[in-house]
Amino acid sequence: MLNDYWAKTQQIVDISKWLDIAQAKFEIIDKLFINIGVKPNRILFPTFNPLVLLLEQHYDCVVVADQSLKYSWQSKSEFVDTLAEVGTVDVCLALDEYFTYADSENTQRELLDQIKKVLSGYLITTLQDYKNSAPHKRNQADASSSNNIIIVEENILDRNNKQNWQNYIYFIENHSDLTVLGPTPRRTMYFKQLAKYCSDLQGTNYVIQKNLLYRGFYKRNYEHIITCKF
Image 1 (cartoon, rainbow, N blue to C red):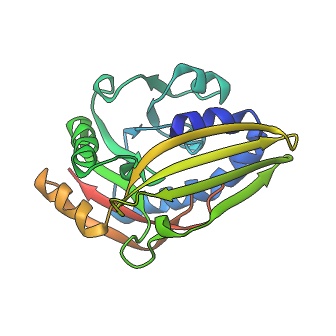
Image 2 (spheres, one colour):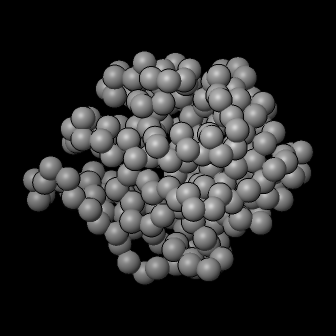
């Protein structure tokens, strides 16, 4: 779903504007590299993120996404269809709560295991604090606008399992044209839960980074940055 989201947003925004927004995120990631003492040779994005447009100016990047995104966003990075085609990387940027895009704990474990197989270095990911804030349980829709396009995100909680929810994103154009992305299965991921999964795969140096927060494009809530070495 994330790749579909970027395909849609690319049609309605000015890339130069996105680069300005991405610059702040680039500086956060660059500072993080210094904090953890890493100079990446090859960076993996398991889904597309406009941040790659800046990082690829300094690092060798590979993105798991359709080739159409490469051309529409004018990226210079390598794009592949699956993680199995990636080869070896020393940093993985699994941003935008990558591990919550799942419908079960087993699926979340599989997502992490797939990354671990190609990673010889640091996993960098982001999560909201589901224990204390439970953002997925809020009975509301978040909206933003750009170039007269209204983007609405809605979460619908699973009545039978409150760890799961369905995510919808609506693009409203010209006050009448509607595009819907979803439903996309999502599931909570807690800090200690991710720490356990990383430990089970022999991950070390699991850290919730202090004083460094990430906020996705068109998102209201900040996410905590987490690092782990494999």
